[in-house]
Image (tube, rainbow, N blue to C red):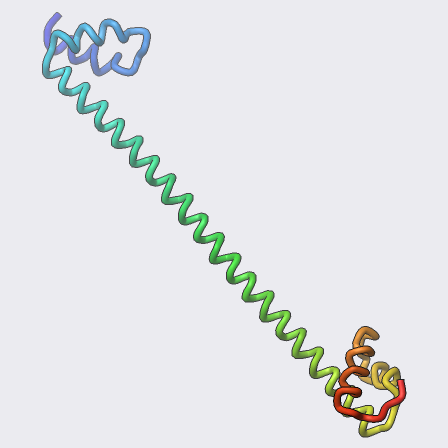
Length: 136
């Protein structure tokens, strides 16, 4: 078999496990082909390592992206709760002012301002805190 034929057999059959014995014989007999096989293995290992590192980087980036998204969501929810809390405080203050000005009951103030009944206890607490006379 000529050197060219050995190269062709090696190149065509190097990944075929069924013809591995013949390829190994060629590798033993031809130093140039043997060096090419080592280079091919090295390139394959480098490619596998590159793919592994890329996968690792993707995992890290996905994790960091998830953390950022969670932080943004938390900030958004915090802002909404802050707005809700501010709205609730403003509603209680409005009710206290209406009760002081119009001399009406807490229930009437809740009704006039169209507040949730859950505000009733908070309004009463604020009125007591400010030492304002009121009728429940």
